[in-house]
Length: 117
Image 1 (tube, rainbow, N blue to C red):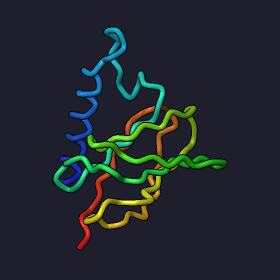
Image 2 (image 1 turned 135 degrees about the vertical axis):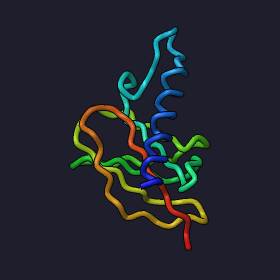
Image 3 (image 1 turned 90 degrees about the vertical axis):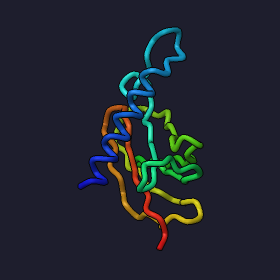
């Protein structure tokens, strides 16, 4: 339960930071105003994980991207029905076979990776 609360807090902080980043002539950009799906990958300590291979799939196609130093990647696609899969993880992390559901409207999907044992 503690990890879930911590992850939720991390997502809230990330959304607040995104809202403050602007960069569009004073217009605030949040997952609700950016026409994209954002994915945040963190570890159990809520530190961002760079270099995670994240795949966004629809019924007809898949797109693969890697997370940046902030743990984020962005998929600029039409709103719709998608799933997310973790294809590759950096050294020291356990593989993740989970199929993550994506909201049908633009937003943020937060994923916590576990360390390899």
